[in-house]
Figure 1 (cartoon, rainbow, N blue to C red):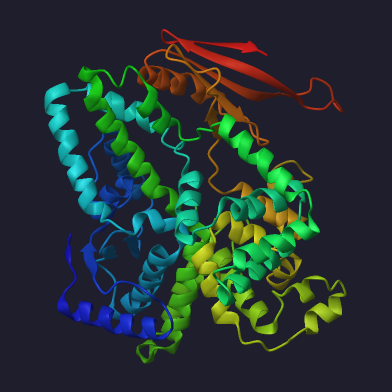
Figure 2 (tube, rainbow, N blue to C red; figure 1 turned 180 degrees about the vertical axis):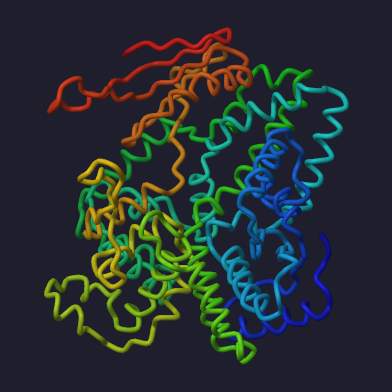
Length: 533
């Protein structure tokens, strides 16, 4: 692994100028490295962070990937990581014209990392430097405590998806925007849970609030809330009850944080070193959370800009066919399976086109006539403004849930696919299952990363027992993982652990409904038992 040469660095700096002229925003300093396929195989289990701590599972992943590579050799084009400065890696086989395209792709990723609100907790420090310090600390602890360090890492990693990421993001955003508790309650709870308003109504209310705060910031909130209370006289009483409930009921969705704070085992003087290891695992997991939750929108944003900027770059001359082939390979729609590059790119096209025609406005949303919807065009020229707002405020779920509609699926001929036996029962055939937007959207959303929502019941938890509650959201927990995970939590907590969850029982006869049963798993002295509630 080595830094790119001065010739390639000059190309990158020229790409930066063009990208900024187009509206992208990113730091001046970036680092670019040339790597081999072997380097990429060894870095990928660490999330491409060269300074990440060593762990035996990463070594297993490297061996597995090397075995796959022998069977299916390939040349990844690039990888970029969200550090300060941003670091990107390029295959040593890339010609100059391909690097120009890739540089634009990478710069769009960096723009996304440094401007999307879900990454805001990563903006103020260099994770690569922090990871190096963590690696040195873990190595020092290994020399003192041996294999127990790896046990603590493994136990912590078994629950590192229970970090309460959305709560952290919401608190950061509320602090940044200085939202009062009443305003936060109005938009987050009152409109959505009590009045059950649709997304368009909520957007209109947000716009009203922003306008009044921009014009009369000193008394804007009071005026806005006065109108809310006039239309909804029960608002104050509902807010009061909500505030009282929040005081009585503390919801801990960050299981690792709760264990760090309350575990008598970890807080013993001889075990304080374990807290350092657990904190490293938690901080690393939180750092990677926004990347996991923005795969489609991030890749769509990068694909949109590499295509737009490269097609306008004179250096494409002579390489049009080669670019078209590679670009099609990256951004083509998968009829079976999902390609986040393709879906994200086409959604940005769709949003830009709709914004330019005024189709994102509420007046258009009320139109049901198909012909009028097709010909509707107010020539607002707000397409670029709209996609930059989406880049700033959306993650994968909100991106797909808001903008995947029937107009989108019709425009790009999208559908869900089913499988069945052929008539001769000799092979599997694929067929178009549905062209409805709601079915396609459901398929996309179900493919997203969605860890279970598990919280601590503080009323049933004490030093001798950690009581966890899983909120059932249509999917049961993976039963084969429950025992090992409970053992890990029991070790970190130092005492008995209980987990309340819902399990689905398949019907024994055709036509019967699936039965939902609430069950309780109890892990004590390394033995896990299940009882029905």
